[in-house]
Image (cartoon, helix red, strand yellow):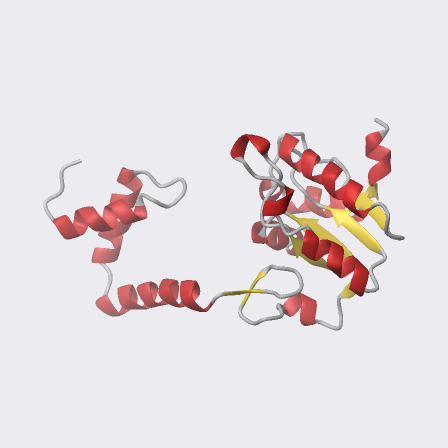
Length: 205
């Protein structure tokens, strides 16, 4: 792609680094910004810079937060005896949008994937174990994507957590195998949460 400006080329190159954004889409986005008022573009740029510099991760659940403790963990209205284990922030948002869950979360920060060089030590597993030691937790819900990586992660976590006197359950599989949690519609995901089953039931199938 030939550019009439080095500034334009550099901006397109940066946008093209975003996931799912090719050069043509990047060019369209950059040209759109050029057509906006300078104040709007400066506001856009400032919001991204502020996000990167000031964003925090909740000290309890590891979810993205504006403060050291996120709003969910800080809320006295949530059921802190139930922890829903998810891959990342996108899954927290997906479950919250169902309005079917009132517990708290634990964000692993990924899934076990030997092919990608991701092992248990790369995830927030030890911090989950510590929560079970210190908190009045009664149930853990595994809400991970129905993929090989998701199932491998659940199997590992079950081995780590089964010694605790808690209920270990997993979301019902109204979700097709291979499906990423964040793309499941809210109704199906909501039903999967409310009709969760003991994890040991899935092992016997």
